[in-house]
Image (cartoon, rainbow, N blue to C red):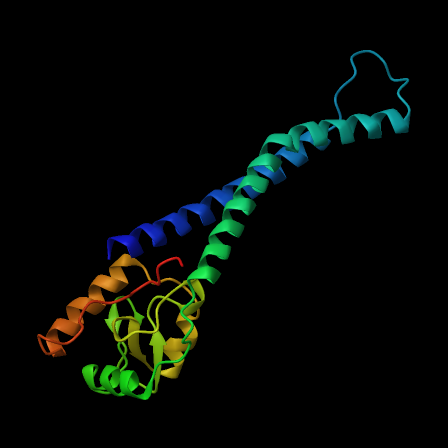
Length: 189
């Protein structure tokens, strides 16, 4: 579980850093475009003013632009590693689906909002930790879901709190020998 927490918070941090960098880039660009006041001389031509604005904007966006490039490279490396981690088996076997649905008692295990368990019956098996991000196709990573919750979750990585709440709910209806822990990630090849 610690590995999934680290992954979740690393990605949240990267998204926040990217958003802050884009805002920094936009503000720097806007400030850089402001014409510089030339004290006492009004003989500047339009081309000189324009050139000064462009030079100011380029100089202002250099550092935030560099940060944006670095964050893009980090995101690309993480995505490439996720692709390398993908389990060759994309779909759960019939046995895994049967066991996972039986473990959940045919009810959706996802959250419908405010930490509450969804009251609808389960129709689909989903990867708790998304397959596209390296989640394994195993019973530990299987979560019974209704179609609405499965669509809403998409390929998002659930938060550590969601993982803890699901594990706590599974204690209430799971047999002691059943796989109650949630989420599993493929190792890098």
